[in-house]
Length: 308
Length: 308
Image (cartoon, rainbow over all chains, first blue to last red; front, side, top):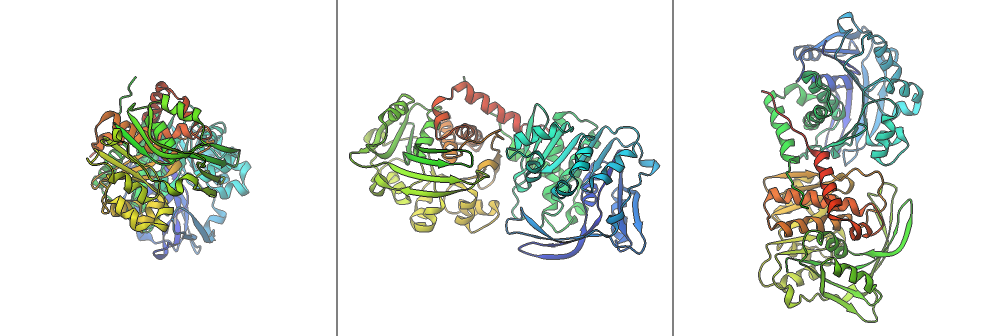
């Protein structure tokens, strides 16, 4: 398998200052896989849902090339549910409800057909669950990307640091990077995080774009300035999915290619913001993705010759 | 004269979470001129100070090519004074003291040698003062850039709209753009502002960079991720000074060249943040500026080929 994605597949209820939607399809792995599948057709999913999760959606994901041998469907149980409310700036939100349901006892099982992935994407989950997936994959993948959040820093920092030491790329938002490193400056925070093990760190700044760091380089990609953000839920996961999907397709993990992958991640994330839930990811075409990537080129391209 | 800068020359007392400095050199025109003079040596200043302002600083500015025929020095009066305190994120601040002093009755006089500028930079001031400068320049400059702030929207919106209708480029921060346009989306806000008269609008987002809009294009330039921001005072004015200084030097006001000018503005602003007040602008060399511009190229440069 080219790419394995681990994470939640769930329901979200979302309230923005402009609208409210109950129980739309959500979950980190949903967004990641739906973004990545536009780039690689060899894409496996490790997750868990209850039998309340619509089979039609799973079938649609399967048609998009998302293999579900690693998806556990628990009879008589309920899928993970999250409800949140966005503030006026849509860059901050409050969690209203978290019902773990099937996630409470999630024991990820890597099926034999998934045991030698080239690329492994560990979406936001309890660090010990992320570690159990790493432990089941005997040969080290070409690249392991991990996403996490402040919640795990607050309650499971030791486990989180252990898993961070085992991965190649950490994706994390700006506030979380500051918390993890104990540094306000993102440059200093990134350097401290690189000392924890990863070779790369990506700091996601929501509507303000994303920064890619290795020990020697910094690359910045903006978010696309949108006329209207309908719902930013899943934008960070979509970013991660576009990023790893592009890398998995191109099989090239140089810093130069990671820069392209960050741009692709930002392009994919911009689609997610245009409608509630992952709706846009189901409908976008390759042409739309190409046009969007070209918008990023136009947005950031300049040539300058310095004068002595 | 190639470039005329209008604005305050003043004292600032600045408190950050990390340090405090009393009565450093400040003022919008100070920062603008000190940034622009690295690019054009034909640079005139229209402003007012009291006789408390140090002659040594004026001499230093003069040595950097900043002509002061338009600078009024009021005997027995005090220079404009501002004191502010930054919050922990350094992206927001409170004004503690504003003493208008000489600014209260400032009547700008354009000397004959300044009457045909190629470029005119109207730094943040009361809109009617900005208008009085425009009215004294008989032939329209090649480009007029105006900076303003929310204070004038609150107390002098009619005068502000009149002067905005007469200029080519408005520079404004994100919150102020939202207030002026009554739109939260910066894309929509920019479009509404362009309908007010200017051909270009630059939305400054502090540590999150700057957006340049005309009716058909958007360009984004990041702020340089700094290890340490010592004092962001004057960064927006320095940006404007680098922007118009670069344009004045190159005499090219195409969108392509404005993109370069925005990058130069961001590069110059990054220097200002490194020390208190405009100290870095006095000491930086052409080599340092060139290196900084090349850091921006490295930070944003990518090549991507879209696949069908």
